[in-house]
Amino acid sequence: MHEFSLCQGIIKQVAKANHERLDNVAEVSIEVGKLAGVDVESLQFWFPVVAEKMNCTMLKLNLEQVDGLARCNQCGTSFNLLNLYDPCQNCGAFSDYVIEHGRELLVKSFSLNS
Ligand SMILES: [Zn+2]
Image (cartoon, rainbow, N blue to C red; front, side, top):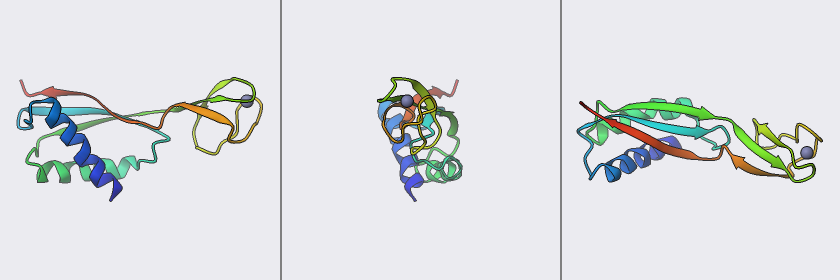
């Protein structure tokens, strides 16, 4: 049910940014990092359920996934990290990197009904 509460969080953020209104919001765009530990299918499944509970049944979710990006501490190379425990793609060092991107779930924007 992790994704259920994530949906609530997303919708609450939109309401807050929109003067506590949801009735005039058409669509919310979010960005989910592939390393965020979020089950995207589950998120998309729960979103309309949560939206209905929060009285914004018509609210649509536009979800974009972004790749993980890490910089290796051994060789300094930045590389796409698909799984948290993958080795560096350049030198093969294990789990010795700084994650620069891909662990976030961001509410990017939302659009209002015209
Ligand atoms: Zn490396």
